[in-house]
Length: 362
Image 1 (cartoon, rainbow, N blue to C red):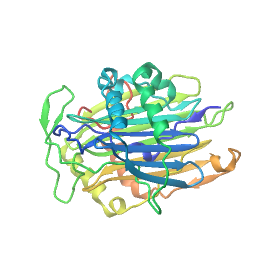
Image 2: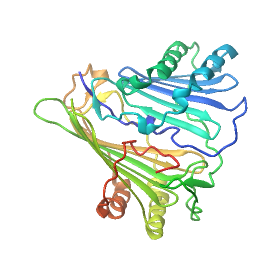
Image 3: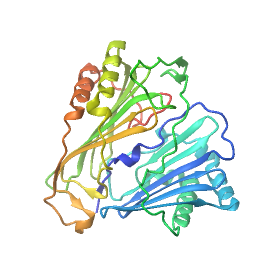
Image 4: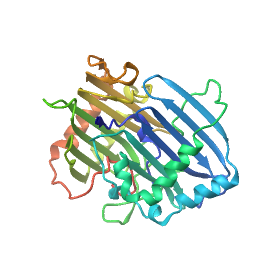
């Protein structure tokens, strides 16, 4: 059985490289997250052994949170794995992305390096195979250590996210040179350590005559504080390769100011949502995920309208489930994207898909 690779809000975590000092022994070491059909497991580990672990049973709305400390021998083992040469040299452009596949085995990895977070997104087990030597030990390490006793009572899952950091002062331009960022406008604060203003990912699920919801079209856009942006348009059918066009350019100062006003408007800035449903396939519909860095956190919103969802708690037999979210709050943003990015029809660049994951080089 194949599955659609839903990009839930859990996948917006630690996504950018920041310019920081070498972390001390009490600093963070790694954040890992793995989502399968049954469970979403994430862990945040500090170099002194302290850890925060969350296990979320998909489809049944049950979560458990654990905290504790690993012995130094466990941390030494973990440090050796994350410092493997292959892993240190790996970038998102080397990883094969996919929208549909025969499995749900999604791994997100964020490793604290001397110059910030190295963030990698592996949508399927197949995407990890070329890097099996360095990745499988980490996956096995997570499997061995996810079994923890004594969950914290009444703890609320937070996706194992580390706190935000100090702001960056420079960012790399498309040609690799450093460029001073524009200062944020008054009344438009951004999350410390973030070089981007917003990232949005839209997945459109389409049925065909042979399989259940086996066509996916994805559009993602990320806009940086400098005005640079990256847009990707991807398409994939089951048993076919994903095709992606990548567009890069900059918006005007006026357009950038308009975007800040939209993002800071009360309709968006005061909106709160629960984590989107996961562990299901969709026959037809659209799912939109939006990430906006704020002063002390990253605001993550998810909107979904779909029909015919196979839900895990229904034994994958519910073909008539319907869900429609009120997406009025993101209509101004969608209009801005259409006018300032999509309608410009810039020539596509021959670049690999990254799902617009933030980096210092859009």
